[in-house]
Image (cartoon, one colour):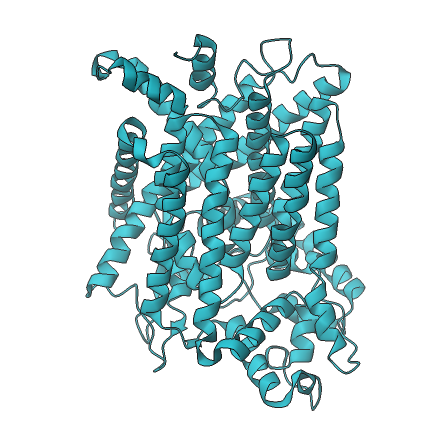
Length: 605
């Protein structure tokens, strides 16, 4: 039988049965429930505002990385191109063509892609993306790295293998980036990268870099499974799952990043798995919910070990659970999530504790503080890379990396209190400067947001080009005289349109969620509806924490990539709802379906 009209309405008005439509209550809301519903609306509205800013940025601009004068390869310097530049409009126009291509593929999958739905399709996507990453890794044949932190830690590993780990903590002091004692004092989270690379060198020798990339690829494919799982938690619409299959498959920066000899890709896949398991916990009851919540400790702890900034995913999950607990009148899920986050945070310090234990009694100083790093993101400091708008003059990238925070750390005598005191005064000066010159402040943040969110590749091709083979040679994605460079340029145009489509569709869903939350029936909402609404809130909270953090933090596109990936389930449901709406606007274009086909598709929803 066909689904009831009520279920069809849910899919139509709630972005593919996201549960944010008029079926909305969590039951008869008491005072606490009404507070929870109000907080949910406020939170969704704030997330929608942040996403709206990103949509505005990606629609009005795009970012291409500049090439170096010495070797013609990609650099971290950025060329921002807007519709105002006479010589730069073509790139944005090609981005619009890319958006049309992405929409056409999604429409085709939504309408005719039955093979893209179901467990088999999901596993085919997971395996296919893994094979794609492995092919890229084999093509690169990484034996060397030109990325700063990667070769620094690699040199420490070589020294440890030659003279023992204790040898790193003996001898005369050198500068910060060449002395393990200073480096791990400043960046204790890098201990995980050190131990991992140390173990891979022992196991695989000169193939250690490739082994690291394979681990990143496996983690990324875990993230692919997590994204499809999140879509399943968010919506029961087969159309949304088909659209998600296309959007996840087209998320090329996620796969290119697995070649980066650093923890970003590995941590991203693990953090997405944490989110997927938390979403499952929100959609279950009793032991099943407890099992999913407890199980999420493993990927979160590993993600925090690899890269501490993935704590933002945990913060978003706690915020979502807080609102869900108020709506449902039960706090067990919130308590469980807080316990998981606390345990994961404690476990994330074990690699550094192990390094301290083998250091021979070396007394490490206090690390670079959060406040010190935030100040770095609010200054126009002299850094390593530049930015140009519409071919204009080169200037330092707003909020870009510079050695200032490290200099403050070293001048403080590795003392956290002194760092925070200096950073507080500098932050006050930054805020006063922004208040005194509002136009300069507006330009600062406009350019900063563009460098973070408007790069279609999120710097993934740059980090891919940082790998050197046995002869030290690097691939050059910027060389358009060869087929590789041409392909990368056209894929960048496609990804420019991909950004516009995904962010716009996710924004549409959040706007609907904010408007429709809690409307309608007084009786208990079905478990499926409650789970999907909680998942929407979870993803919105994670995006909000990421946007807010990197509005203030050091500006790098690669840092915001995990949060751009996290909105793909929202975009899938939003785009599916939009396609259904347009399909109803033009009924004469619908194809006549046989009853058996129609029934099969309805059951798939």
